[in-house]
Image (cartoon, rainbow, N blue to C red; front, top):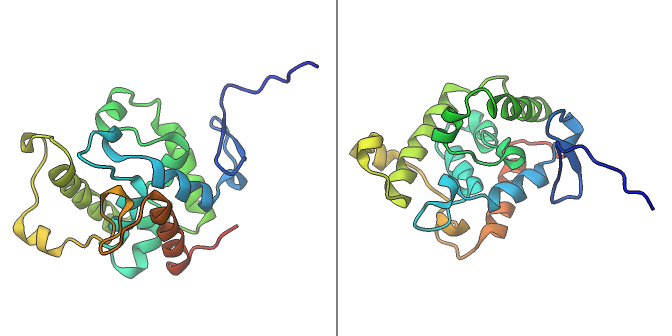
Length: 193
């Protein structure tokens, strides 16, 4: 029996769907695939003192924006479910190669879930605040490479998901942060399907 060749740009997803990374379609996007993947991808390429998933990061970004921006904040890194969490220095080195693919997925996700075309300032600010917090708390990166949080910023910071997928006050793992991500998606007005 002859094997059918599949394009080398086709990727398999946890749901069993196949997506063409070079030509993704809106029907390829699934909140369940996004939640599962982000709950299993570690921030900073895993160079943290404990597991800190992209889902956990996204939950915390959503906790630090006004209610009207929470769905967008929860999904701000959703394209990483399809292209991975590429660390910023590598993105800069590969400028023009990764961004177009990531932007295609981001655009499809934004259209599918009714988000604004461009990242809002509120979400971008919260994302950068959480990035600085995560560097400070979970990495060995020298403070010469980032601006540490001010006491006021630290006091205002809201976190409801801690490393290892543990939610503050709960003893759970990545499966639970996946479940929490999906519950928040529903709570923030996301429409599945």
